[in-house]
Length: 435
Image (cartoon, rainbow, N blue to C red; front, side, top):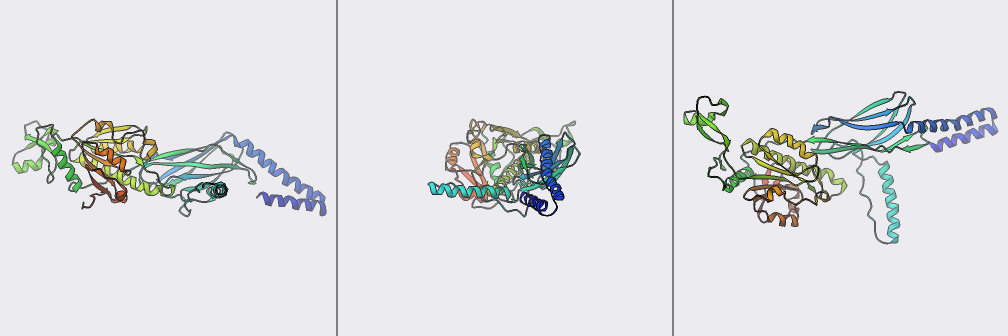
């Protein structure tokens, strides 16, 4: 645009000197005054416009459409020229621009003087490509306003992975009407959407649930009560004969039909050994282009862990859920029912998976578990190396290590643990065995 405008001024000069001086002067004055007027108007509006970004709603389930709401406000009736920006979403969402190509990784700086020069040229080319190349998760926008003081634009988003999905506005520049002058606005804003998981329904006859229930019963040494659950039956409560006045909701109709008289569940379930579930939220380093694959694996762990907790709550097994909260500290909660688990599923996503370095200060196991003995522990992780395995071996509890099946070969297994694989279908399969 600038080069074309200069060419138009050159034509006006030629017209003024060689054809008609009066008309040439008028053309030249018009061509010189218009950019000046456009620049002045842009400078006047530059400090008087604000941009905000919101999500409606701020919590949603997977595959539910939400809206990114961009609001432009100004405190003057002067028109807003052209405001250019990019709406960038992370891979928690489906691509905003499916036709775009992923950006290549930045060049690595080599050693030596010659290498430094080549690196500088390569990095400049990378920065130029980063500014101009359309990527799948960046949507370019060009907005304008007339005399109205507020304008609202809604852009649909489609969540695809559970967790805290982030969106932001970047590369925000204000240009005049002739696109000859550009000014960067330092109003980059961001927002986050809590994408709730889909808790899968797991089967009570799966090998893992049978194994854990048997281990819980066998590890119970603190009570004389005999658990009425084994690998071939369902958990339940101690029972007694019906007494007139008991609530009908507490009658076990199936057992009553077998014994031919009414049987009532006791108020408290039978005592069982402690069962703990730990969600390891550490994320291993990975290339930027593979974040989507990493999110899919992390979602496998979250949804499978919640599904197993829901199964335990359904059949009367109280569990302790431990995870690193949004403040980077261990948080634990006793899970007794499905409604409580659904609420906690939203809370744990506020922190979610983070880079290993952000959780390096935390011990591998929460103090709430290391201070207790004689329980059963399920450890869900996507990051188990040799050092981690050595630390887990010091834990006296019976240990089940659960990892995504795609990472099984890279996982170090403690000697005191059995390895179970989390499949893409959210099934829990023992390594080398069947479901």
